[in-house]
Amino acid sequence: MATFAGLFTVREFRYLYPAYALSYVGDQLSSVAVAILVFDRTGSPVATAVAFSAAFLPSALGPVLGSLADRFPRRGLLIVCDLARAILVAALALPGMPIGAAIALLYLAHLFTPPFMSARAALMPDVLGGEAYIAGNGLTNLTYQISQVAGFAIGGAVVLLVTPAGALLANAATFALSAALIWRGIRPRPAPESEGARWSPLRDAAAGVRHVFTDPWLRQCLLLVWLVSAFAFSTEAIAYPLARELGGGPPLAGVLMATIALGYATGATVLTRWTRPSVRDRVTVPLAVLSGLALLPMLAHPPAPVVLALLFCCGLGCSFSTPLNAMFIQRAAPAYRGRAMGVAIAGIAAGQGGGFLLAGWVTELGVTASATVGLCGIGALASAVCCGAAYASAAATPVASEPSGT
Image (cartoon, rainbow, N blue to C red; front, side, top):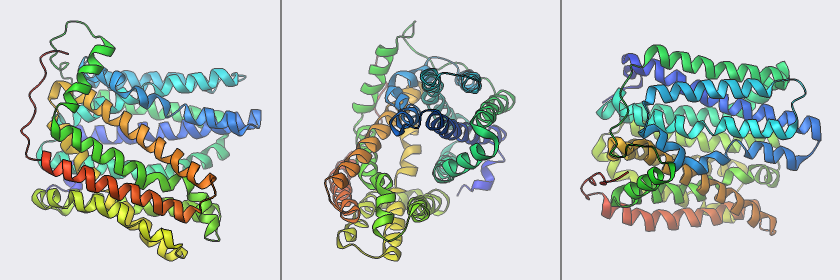
């Protein structure tokens, strides 16, 4: 059984992991810094929301941008993405930068995130093999969950201490350091073989979508993760109204969000560190069911301690997606891994964004936050049952052969 400590005996992983962590922290920091900068200058919540959303919109272009990871050497693409973000984010710190230009630069900087994520995901199976790859993917997912909760709080503290411009320069430095780590520690590999002589973004993206959706296992894996996550994680969008309903405020809202992440991190650790592959496969669908089932008691408006326990169980159930993420990339043909990851990124972003909007809209209609969470639990449970049955049926499907054209 692979261990997290054992992963760091692999030289390339010792460099790739901190490079990923630094790049993600950089993404979080730039989002917070620009949002604060915009609000300080305009006092407009709408303008601030537009600035903040600019960090996430490029994920919708995941299938197109992810195709870069299947056309160019992945090590070089990682370095280029980090250096481009370092330059663009540093430009945001220039004195007197117009608000519109700052938002545009932030959007451009985040256009380099999907190809970075796709290239890193596609490169990981070359760095780690077998169960080590499952464990390595689990560790990176843990890092994502922990930094998602802590990143915004840390980002706010950094901005408070060094001003938004100083935080943006620190952010640019994280990207530059990530590029240096990849250049120093990752060995060059040739670009994946492709039959097409010239890169065509739309054609390559369409080929990636076809590759994913013509393989029954890949298709059902994504639908299970997308739909269950969309409903289960929608609680995050109404954490503050839920905290107010429970008699708390912003601190409790933070605890509610952290509890979901803690449950996810706990489940991901157990699944990728201490669970045999055969057992892991058997508990995938039951865990997905748990993520929705745990939220149903919220319809009865339980007190805060019970809510925290339910949210922890929901996060625990959602951890089913961690080993599936690794298995998804392993199952995709090597020449399509970047595009497959791009499709996954786009669907997760769209699903969770839609879930956030749905939870907010239902609450806006006058439904209590607790009841809204319970209704989202019904959606997650229904998705887990329906998609889980289709996923289990597709689990024995042979690996799809690579399409003839790209």
